[in-house]
Image (tube, rainbow, N blue to C red; front, top):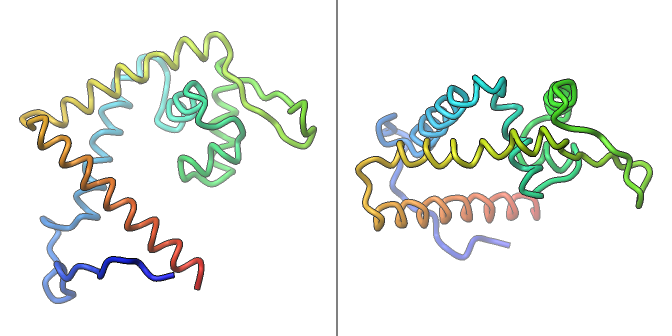
Amino acid sequence: MKPSVKPATFYRPDALHSEDSIGLLTKRAMQSITLMVDRRLAPHDLTHAQWVPLFKLARGECTTMASLAREVSLDPGSMTRALDRLEAKGLLRRVRSKEDRRVIDLELTEEGLEVSKLVPDVLAEVYNAHLAGFSRAEWTTLIDLLQRLVANGDALRETKEAE
């Protein structure tokens, strides 16, 4: 299955520059966002490796270690260590699935649910700070463009996996 849209020709191997690299620019933006969120959540003793799983679990996006590791692109060993820390802090518990005894479900404790409620406010604040000076139309365009970039990447991966 080939992508339905012909690849762009904006970049050339002999003319690559970091100031217009979509890879470097998106990485730097993400690093800045992560650093600012981590700084805001540090007083609550949460690191990036911990607040992301809390946030995903609270939203019901994942319920097992494997699904969480896939969702946040972490290897299972790193995810296990992060979950061990969350469990030691009393924010998370592992519960054997009633449907399949081989599966261990992840549940937030009451304290974990309370702490996870901090994350959306911090994320909104940090995102908005990074979007200072953007108009609503620019923000909407940025979201649309990033979604297209991600969709193109997904299509390329699917094409490579099908080959």
